[in-house]
Amino acid sequence: MQAAAQTTHAPRATTPAYFVNPVVDFTLAGGLSIVAFLLLVLFRRPERTGGIILAAAQLSWVVNWPHFSATNFRLYRSWENIRQYPLTALFIPWVILAVVAASLWSPHVLAPYFIKLFLIWSPYHFCAQTIGVTLIYLRRSGVQVRLWERRVLVSMVYSTLFTLLVRSEVKPETLQYYGIDYMNFGLPAWFLPLAGILTTATSAGLVACFIVWCRRAGRILPVVLLVPAAAQYLWFAGGWLWPSFIEFVPFFHSLQYLLIAWSLQLKEKRDRHDIRPSRRFVIGESARWYVINIAGGSLLFFFVPQWVSKGTGLPLQFATGVFIAGVQIHHFFVDGVIWKLKRSTVSSPMMGNLSELLHPPAPGSPARGHS
Image 1 (tube, rainbow, N blue to C red):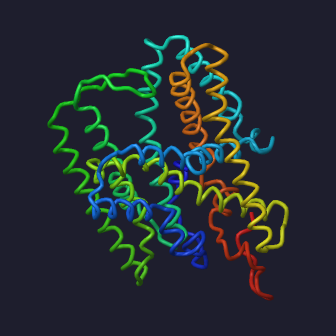
Image 2: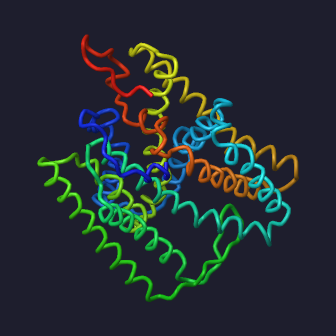
Image 3: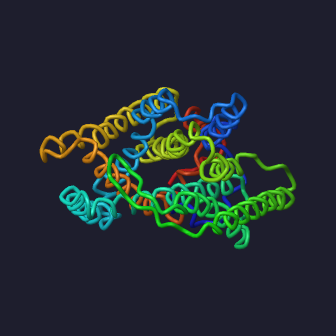
């Protein structure tokens, strides 16, 4: 979804601002994470308890893992897609598999560097998705984003990444990921106040941009335009003292992704096969797509690591950590190409709305959104 950030052109004014409706979009685009954080603060529950860890792990089966599978499903569902992205679909997986194999072979030399690469790239990917989702909502709301406004948005989101990395890397210590030791960089301590200043200044700048957009549009724009960035601030900067909240950040990120991937899947399926809008189509296709991705996610994150561990004799925890890193890095590569809004095959379906998938257009009304 990160490549969706490459467009600044506004769509037609008739495009609905929401994929579903204000409540659902607000919730899934980041609002649920904001509400969860406020509740944890209100009830003073900062601890990362065993129950919190278990709940997050259980949610991985139905949200986190399917969001990775949804990316692979979108890329590999047809030869047409594979031919459209041959390097990403056919070459990159073999490179990643080679690195995964090398890391499994060298648990104390290569594996720590591979895990370190993944742990730095992962929050960058979160930021790219936040920017892309924000620009999608701006596009849907008819907002023409100017270059300086786009730079403010990008600066604000990446300032949270800077804050996260500084807090993570300021102490030169050895940490573990699935039992794999890796080292922190040991950044200078003076980076911490600098990160705070940057995040505060750029956040204020984004709020100022929202005011400018409202004045330019002559109306109060949907608050969902700021929700992904506000959630991003809590994920990487504002919520760092609340481990109970941080445990669920991948879940919130995955919900955000699935909302748009699901909407795009329905719209593309309807347009590709010229299916008449109906409740039956939406429910049936949604169920089919979700079941496929639950199965795909379980295969990638549970069953394959088990098979790798049994086949190699390596500890399951170690094999799982290395393989998960490989799956996610592949996800980062694929996301970088399949969400480019400059492609009409992506930008047109991305402007769809649930209502037009449920109800046929009224007689005489113009058809909208077909690719």
